[in-house]
Image 1: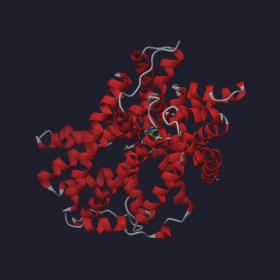
Image 2: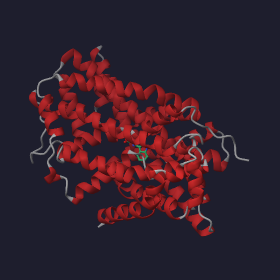
Image 3: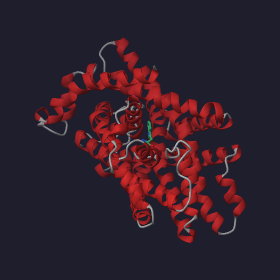
Image 4: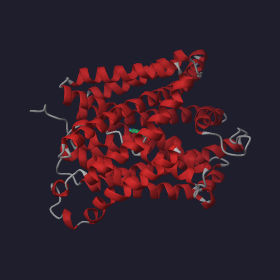
Length: 449
Ligand code: TRP
């Protein structure tokens, strides 16, 4: 028999962990800046639409497959089809997910390390340790390497604790802190001069910019990235969900939280940019567009914080702690993908599995740090632009075509005797079967051409 698996203790624990996975650097940093340069509220609406029309059904495919099989992605997809060839394809897809999750973690840990560095640099500077503070925010190989290793160690420490005592416990602690910090920071920044300009840019729609197909591809990509789809993170969290939970409902709550926090982050980032503008910090590039995302986080915001003297130190520290927390609750969900596989398929104890997977990913990440110019961008593009949507497409095909309808209905009936008469049952099965693959396919083909 398989070893006893972990299971989330409570519904709230699951929702916070899954939302913690979803809410990450993508929401707080990617979404607001994309919205700012792409038509403000019009982008917001497009994103909301894509999130609920495409990402939510795909999220449900992962959660339901996970909850049904109570297995990691490799074994789960391998067990759905009846035919042996298709089962092998399932295992291959699962391995693809495992590798992609690991690749995503390898670049994510580098960026998250920078967040840790910035968070520590402000207090250090304030107590006079200027050299250390400077070292932490300057782009060098030793600094990138050490911060990445520290972040990977934190991630491994949480995953080592297991589902209940690691992932669930830390998500329950960190997520409320994240939301509270975000709201407090946004409220403060909104009182500063210039904030209202940013707010109006965020909330006034400019539909002209939204209808370009490039933008749709980007918005779809960010919706997928933002909900952690395609690589088995949501599948594995779903597999730790109790059979008594109503999956369509908790899935919707997770998606709402994810989108809600992205939207909330817009109320901080956009006003902050225009506060910076009012204080003479450059926020536009030569072409008149807003500065790109990385410049924004690591140049514009620090420059803004510096103009606010003492309060600025607290703001800056709080902001980068917020980013680090968001990154950590996401990175643990990525590491859990290979770890769960090693535990279930190769019967390793959790400790060994965590050290092995974490060590391997940290090693690969170190390789990326050492060859930053050639590897960093390539790893991001391969994993998020191509691999992730492709795997998402395959998961929809598995859920829609290779999972028997009766078995699916039984899965939904586990906690809802009336599942057959629900709107979800009337729409979703047809939807993942036809619409999801077709739309993702079209967008994918376009992005390759
Ligand atoms: N969704 C997270 C973010 O917005 C990142 C993330 C966590 C992720 N797990 C993932 C992205 C799996 C892709 C795949 O930052």
